[in-house]
Image 1 (tube, rainbow, N blue to C red):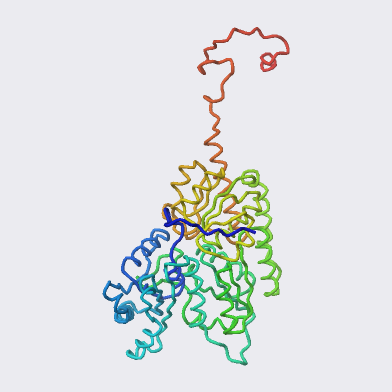
Image 2 (tube, rainbow, N blue to C red):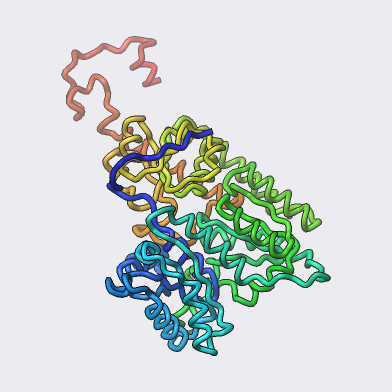
Length: 475
């Protein structure tokens, strides 16, 4: 069990965390034809937009109510109304998702009340899907915003099934945490379908931010789960929640529809995936397909090969709680010591993390502690690259943002294959680091009698005798 330690610095020097509105906006991007709307100043949205564009390398739909100083003081009804009308008339979205920001939360805008007034005033918007989530950026973090948004989408968009309705045994709801990439969701969809199940992902970033080229330009999200499919999630037989952050959404789904849920806190590592696959076998009534038995064997072999390089390493990791817990726990099982862990918000998973403490802090804290504790492996997002340079230790990017590498949306940590890929990547980093710091070349591998390294001996000539090292070498 890790002790949770609250940082006491007056400010974040090199921030690790991202805000709740950004997490909420990303969750809305998992809906088809969606337009996320941040209720706040233009700058709040601009920074979030740039962050997502740099990470996913895709066009990102994100709008703002553009609150000015005066509008903030007087109230944002006019700005919300104008923004909703402009988006509805110009971009023709299927849904508008609204997230609050610090400035409007401080003022205390009643956005749910605003939406009711707008629906009453404009008949065309009476039944148009609009979801508002309170996501103040002066508390919580990215993961919290995602968690609240998915829970609110379940509460607002999922329809309660009829009393006599029979759940479809093949249909399964999947509520993925913000720590899973579009690549992870694609892998999970393939796994579920191979068991004969029909999964519905909420949100489904694999449909909207997986890097595909649409046939036509659209100003909204270009894929994801439709509002109609979300409404029909009440017909499923099971809900699978991935990550502790999805517990609230799974409970909301169960409360509204009566569908039982199973929470998987981790999907990176051998044990968690064994548990996951056995559960799928149980609910589908099918044996685990042969290809996954083979993948499991490949993962075990990869763990055997890589533990020589990862075992004994001292890990410094900075990430959102579920991502930190998932990846760090897998590495602990590989023999790595979780020496330094820095996170962004509180979570129950830290009670199970095999480390002494988890600090709520920033990247400066991560670097300082990593240096003090002699860490020799660093995992965090792209803003940790300078710290890794100064510490001169191997660095692997995880989480968001990852702006200095391409393919961030396709990296995987879930399933047997995702775990294997991560293990290979980290082991190779450690091998490359060892070679860089202990490189053997003709210049470093000299004959001890060869004083200047150029074949000019400054030692007295030795007369080879039978049985000596020299004569043995000649034999």
